[in-house]
Length: 244
Image (cartoon, rainbow, N blue to C red; front, side):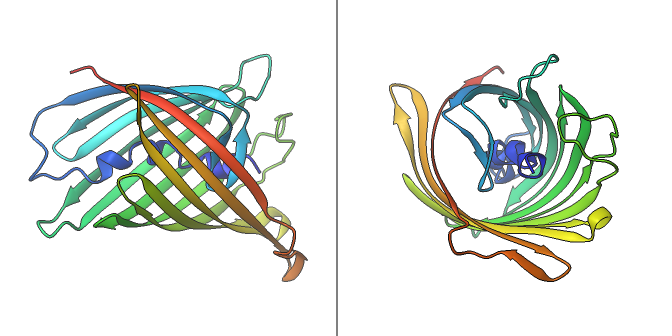
């Protein structure tokens, strides 16, 4: 299920905006752009595509933010293979360092008419963060050859806890989707450790992750955690630019 983990790509890139504060942020419009490359396209523990380039534009004003982000996700079709995300939200921070954020993302694809909508709540304190996302997969395209599904709309929940230091970070996340049309659930969790820094003026991160699959149909365990995990290693190189 490729689409269900693409849902937070833009939220991850906008995490800096989520901790913007009215006290710290000036009432001045700031616009920036970013571009980068990943060795594999992974998000929330799932492989979403091969190596690819990405880029986006962000705007911030007094704690509010909005932007768009796109990546060549490796889906080779006649119409191309771009995922395009549009997002907006608001974030603020209390004087004691506690930060809170609310964001919305819509995920669209140049090669398919399906899309997803997601709301995310986040909180952070001294490097620790928690995130909860609730979304809906709108996949009712009967002629969609790529996903080959019929009226398979469903809701999903995702939550994660993480810690980010100056260089190293760790994250644990869990995903659960209710597939009403087939009376089934799809569940998994994952853990990642990462290191990031600046190299010759570029932002570089390396992430080592492990996913554990748990799939349930009518309460029957189809695949347990033993031998079901997929390991991965991803390098991400990017650069941000202030436009105004």
